[in-house]
Image (tube, rainbow, N blue to C red; front, side, top):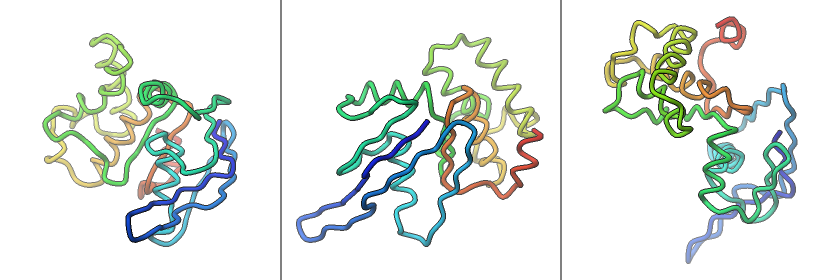
Length: 179
């Protein structure tokens, strides 16, 4: 599903060159769960951003479902991301001017799913994460844990092949699996 080959990422300024990733080789297959751990600043988020097609490597290749992303234009990367990936960002990236239901529906809007179907699917996934009673609330009216569950609902609503999470929820994976 995701294959990284000889992946490197170097950040350069006029004065400093910082190697965030060097010669990373990684393959994650369907059904596998991978946790990347390390101290702050070691490149975890950089790796996740490259795996999620939000950033490009300085060297090396990224393949998603056997498709090489080398040479893809931004629009092609966005389409592949939208079809294949779900994200739970560390800071959630919820839109404060949208209520919970609208935040969760957003990935389906980009896919062109009709409004009634988006709403039905969003209500279903909010029920699964235990937040159907908060669907008309706004992110600023929720706790941090509730915002994280909204972000998870948004990540899974499109039934993506791959879910990338920067900082896992404080809830056990067994409990999420039951939901």
